Length: 358
Ligand code: NAD
Image (cartoon, rainbow, N blue to C red; front, top):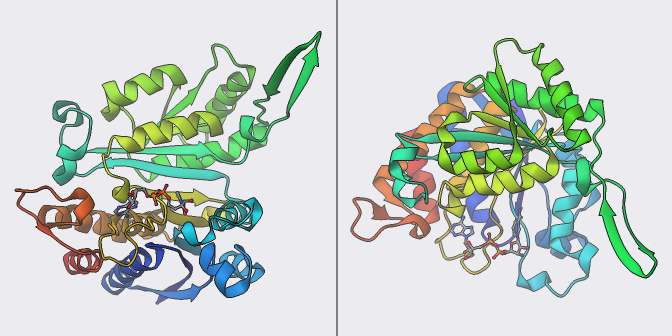
């Protein structure tokens, strides 16, 4: 039987409770689909500061590198807020992404049928359901380009540089196309090629890489138009491929159409499909240990792991279907609606329900 090595970083606040639910669901999926998972626990963030004296211990990096994939809860909390920048839990988060060479960020924007009413988008625009994947380049572009300030004739100015090399574009484009192959086989590359030279290189390179993926339909769109189309007609999109800065903005816009922070999953991928999977939200210290946390973003992140790193698409689909069914029966308090047909449940009860529906 195939066994996958998973490094688990529970982190702080609600991290341990939500990760426990996702691990339960992964195990149930393995039982059902004939594979097993072996977990190695490592420390990150505040728990690592308490246990090991720094937010990203070397053994955590080593454990992650040795694994097929990493499952992360969230880090941070008031206990560590007085520490200086590089000593804070969040420094561990940035550090681990860098140490693992994670250059592709995947953020699905999904509206599950039973949660349609929570979306700010009108029901007639959403239709039955909505499922978009934003693939964002994570380690290049203007956030990492040359920057500076200068004063000429007493006037101060500042600049940042958007710079992409062909290999950087090719590598993220291949991630985008291979994601599209596993989904609806449509990829929309978003740029600003009418103005920016870096976007013209982006567009030419993506067009060339498309020849390796004849089964995927490629289109191009300017970023300003894409921002508009995401709310006007989001159903036209399957995979959106874009640069670091455009992806930062568009993935936030796209994820908000799902209407609840407790439902938003994400993945960051490196070479060879290696990935770190985590919910978008933080460690929610205000509700930690109360049973109020919604574990579905973490469970859906585990579902993405099955699909994009472990090569278990049927198990991934089963997890998504179980989540959708669970939403018709029960809700954690963040998505509960008074007078609705669903009962209010705790974090653990939601995890158990998803397992029972798998
Ligand atoms: P947060 O996402 O933790 O919480 C924002 C609000 O959403 C809170 O009211 C919280 O109770 C609620 N919420 C979040 N996740 C929820 C869930 N699964 N179920 C139900 N409700 C949920 O953001 P914040 O309050 O700004 O930050 C808290 C801590 O988390 C800070 O230390 C911050 O630095 C850290 N943080 C970590 C990450 C990460 O680990 N990736 C991301 C963002 C923030």
